[in-house]
Length: 174
Ligand SMILES: [Cu+2]
Image 1 (cartoon, rainbow, N blue to C red):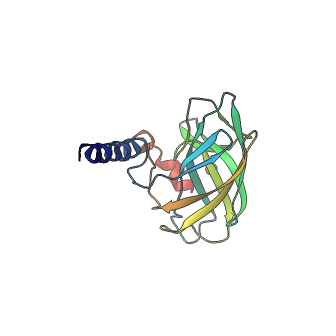
Image 2 (cartoon, rainbow, N blue to C red):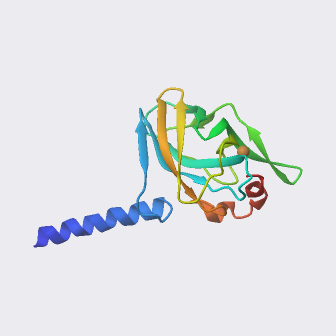
Image 3 (cartoon, rainbow, N blue to C red):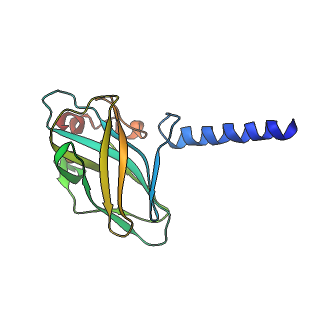
């Protein structure tokens, strides 16, 4: 009986750790390709049915020894997909396309509202909450991986919500 209790204890500890590191949603999704781990991919639902643009996010972890880079992304629901960051320019938050997103070993790269994101343009249909967005990511060294990103409510802030709460302007752009 002691052993059994111990096993349960460990199970709870693991669930707790995932909850703290992730978004509070129990089923933490992780995708591995080469030394890259794509965790908790998600997309934000379109605020309007007319929306032609959207954004997808994830945490990218490099378990290897060498820096890798996210070079491109594509999705069957978007005519064009770019990698974007958000910059402050004259007190206004603006999106800028970047050629690549660096992922350094031991330093998670977080794509989140108000910061780095996968920009979906020319959407064939609005992103609906509760559905799943398929995105294929291409890394310089690790290669390609296709992930399923659950679509969350239009106002969703992601796991770092407290840090991006002031970036409402960017949300409006999506
Ligand atoms: Cu963007």
